[in-house]
Length: 255
Image (cartoon, rainbow, N blue to C red):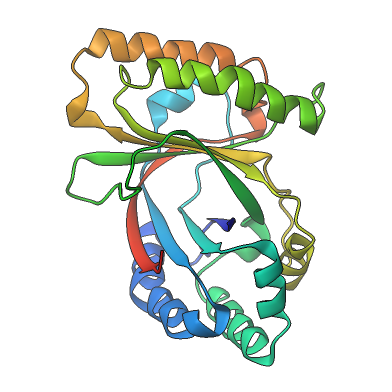
């Protein structure tokens, strides 16, 4: 399975509330209408609701948070390339891009394809950070330190940092934790060119679903988060990364 990650900054003419309302109430139905032409397996919107000021402060200087993230899934990359090669797929993509220009600052909204690496993964995979269920989604787009090659950073993230989060995740109230690594897909370039993207893609992002009501010890949760941050400093360039919290809206789910 392959996932499209689209980190969104709103058009300068819109407030965050207006941006998110248009995205949810106007753009989402358009995606749903065209989903068969694009053979979309799943589509989820994450709306930023908390800029995670304390989490950002603990990590030092970081990039500004995004206003939300659009994520779409396909069964595999070969299938995706076939869809973009059809007339119906090309027309659907054109219609979606035309609507994106109405509310998204496309130049400053990076877009890329990625692969999932589950670390703490419940079964069935049905957790959503909905507005009223007490769960929040942590979204952490990251870039590696300049001294690390991409392969080195990926290896460290998977084999060293992942086990630390798995070991202490329960203490931090983490219900689910995944690493989403950029796929370096050749389709990235096509999407970025059509949108005039100026921002470079991230190495990937970490995502976690946290049950704030499920934390039994504030002291243990704080200690776990300090351990996470201490290790992040070994491979993440915080000045070129960001973190924020959001609520999710599931628009399409054909799993």
